[in-house]
Length: 630
Ligand code: C2E
Ligand code: CA
Ligand code: CA
Image (cartoon, rainbow, N blue to C red):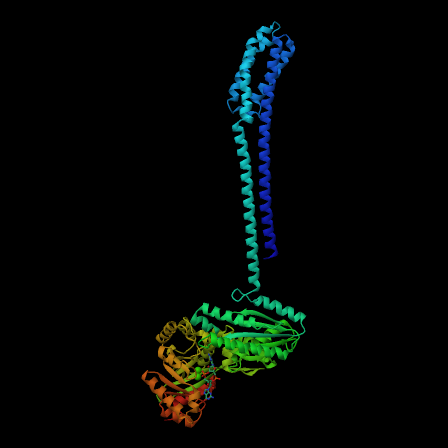
């Protein structure tokens, strides 16, 4: 929990306690005020009763001749005044309204008023006061009774008890409120602790997470003499999630985390830094070599665990290791170098274990340079260092249409010739797939604009499709790209390898159908190099199939290859699919593929990939006078 939030929570708590305290204090004040009010009322009533008694005594004394008239008048005035105060005073209001006090005292007041002329008369005789004496004698017990009823009687006690009870209840309620507030605060603090844990830990394995790892890595590089970083990655873990569900994937991750935890020696710190990636930070007295040996053992142990835990044996472990202060000179480099080693370990089909070395960094820097330069070159259009080559595809039948495969070329001024798959991968991995495709179509359109139109009309051109282009919008986009040049949709062939994973078969079939409705043909490229060529052939409708050069080139030495080519050619012809033999380099290979009746031939025997102008001349020559006759 952040400092600001903690302060806010403290403020809320203080306000809560403050408000509760204030309510209690306020209630207590009100209670005291109420009781004081009762006391005041009691005092007023008691004073009244006292003065009335005084007056009664004065009347008595006067009758017996023991008091003069002046003193009697004084007692009368006092009693009269008291009555007036009681009947009009604010503090006596409550008590006036109870037990018929107001009526009784009004009556008494009225009666006393009647005697005023008599009492103040200079002719007052003692026996004249007899009726007044009797009246007082009958009224005063009633006034006394008022006292009893109000302050000592059962109702007064009931009231007092109710007041006390309400006070006690209120304190209990406030106590409960305070307790609830405290519970709330405790819950909040617990939640804050949980949130704090999750900022630095992974919820599933409860291991430190990537943020904690980065922090620790920096600390260790700042304070330790030597740090070895080992990154562990589960290859093909996604397949477990996809095929067995996420809970099975979670279980597997928990087993891996437990296994790693169990074998942690002193000086090793473990974290989960990605969905299927773990890190071991090693430091201390041991030598680098012993940490390398340790990380190798960890990998072997995990391999065994995964072999048992994953029945299909899909998941394996790759490990990349690097060290600080050499070759990495800071924490960021250490992470980068270990990552590069991991990348190489993943690509190493045998060992899956690599320690960082300089060539890995050179390769990485070359790739980064390539990506930057490619982005710049693609923005240059016609001025780009990139250009297209056209490799002829010769029809077996002289009447067949001449084709060409478009292949990208880049002669980098410093890095030299860049293999096309590297260009394509760099574009794909860095979100430039569509830009590259747009550039290829623009360049093709420009090249074809320089060809005579009748020649263009006699050609079919094949473009290789990269992964990111294969989506719902491809057919419409293709028509857009073609609309700027002379090539018609029916002259275009898309070449597609099985590495373009067609996850959604229904969608792929729809895209294929839409392309073909527009006249665009589709070829299955590099047939026979992967595992799922036949599945592709079964599920999707292709117009062409290109048998990979690896089959063609071994055909003369390996009879089984020839059989394979023959069988696939026959199958394709039955399915009405045109067969292209790729990589035909020698006359022997040519005669073999012709014997097996393939429909088109592409290879160095006829021509290498040619720059546009050279291809234009080649095509004109070829169309006028085909270079060969079967
Ligand atoms: P691919 O589609 O199988 O292209 C055929 C490759 O075989 C080309 O290599 C071509 O030069 C080579 N080749 C043709 N005939 C022969 C032969 O007789 N002998 C030998 N040894 N090789 C021959 P390249 O141009 O280096 O292209 C390699 C791969 O790069 C292509 O394989 C294709 O997958 C990819 N690629 C090339 N250009 C593009 C492009 O513009 N877009 C996409 N997406 N991929 C491209
Ligand atoms: Ca191709
Ligand atoms: Ca190919």
